[in-house]
Image 1 (cartoon, rainbow, N blue to C red):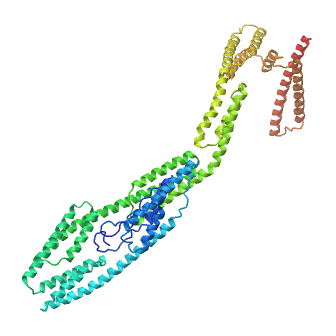
Image 2 (image 1 turned 60 degrees about the horizontal axis):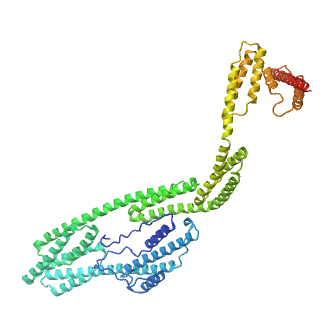
Length: 625
């Protein structure tokens, strides 16, 4: 069919988004697209008509009134000429529906609901609206079928006229022209308008042949014939000028349609003088070729652009379909993915139509991908709503516990408790964004209040610890300064006195404790090693220096040492008893015996050291009596 009349209606691009308002707009546009009465029409030659006035003259104000007006159109006989009004009613119907849903959304949010959870109510009027639109579409389809049937009938009638023209031409060649009958056949030919487009050219060529043959053989008054040729030449020259002027028409499609009308008029015009026929036709055909070439190039470029648009839209669909939904486990992840989808939707809107056969299919794929994403997002938010409420209650409890502890002056215990609360706070999941910042400020405020008080109260304690650190470093320097030329006993006494001084000094800063003690042990051990004092002798010396300290009485210390001594004796006896059962006949048995004997020897040395400690304690007890 000719592009001049063929409908090029393509589905509208829909606006899809995550918000209910945009979803409503998308659904509205989609329904208008699916229920459009813009059907593909047969190729007919019709006169241009002006815009169709709306039937009532007053646009309905409500959706019910729109349905009533559509019903009146559907029941009437003027559905074809009411097309403009029908399209206007259709758009108004869904604009009103959109306004209703937007108001319902505002009311839902005002009542405390969240916009993401809003679901529009079922539209009770839409079925009546669709039913009336379907009736109108059915009537229009029936009209199209009638047009096709009429074109077939017209074609058959024109074939019959051609046979009659042929007969008149043959009769005129024999010297008996029937001019009036010929004119009557021409008038009837012009009255018959629409025929199938693929038959137009063939019919016209055959008709033109018989007409020209009739004029060629017709022996009538020369002045009449010349006058007829002259008038036809004027008509066809004007048509050539009109065709040539179409080269400057910016709208290529409009130029092509106007050219089809000029072709119809050129066919209907009578012949010109034989010597001018080829010249006039060549001129008209040349102008037509320019318009047709522009039209062809326009649609080839459009076709290529539509193919490019399809590729871009396919890539967007693949990108949305390829989103890893399983990895979206947090609000932040969903919000990020939502923004990504919205950006893709914005890109989609900027892309033009795809090829007509694929335009609806690619859009349905795009819509399905977006719908699937936002449906899964909605399900995620519904599932996590209960968890958010639970997390909110737990964080409120943690705030209350922190606030109860903030005024405590038990610095160590309270600090430990607050540290546990802070750890638990991190383990509790997220809460709704509108509560998150407020709760966090409340919790951290209570914690900061306590630690600021503690820091202020313990500043003097830190000063004392730093002073103790200084004194212990001085003791270490004194130990290092012991004269190695003195007798061993004197060196040991000096070391013992410095050890007592070390033990009398209080705590040092926690971070320095291990380091300063290591330096102290290295300095002490250096003297013992120089004097060849064994490890047990050092431990005994340390015991002597610390004896009776730490809150234990000498009597309790003696009892504790005796229990240790008895336990070691029993352990030694057990090992020695087991040694009697071991065989040394194989390598494995001999190795085990060696290990056990080493343990027995070590236990005996330790037991001897404890016994010496017991004697020292008993001596001190005797001195105290």
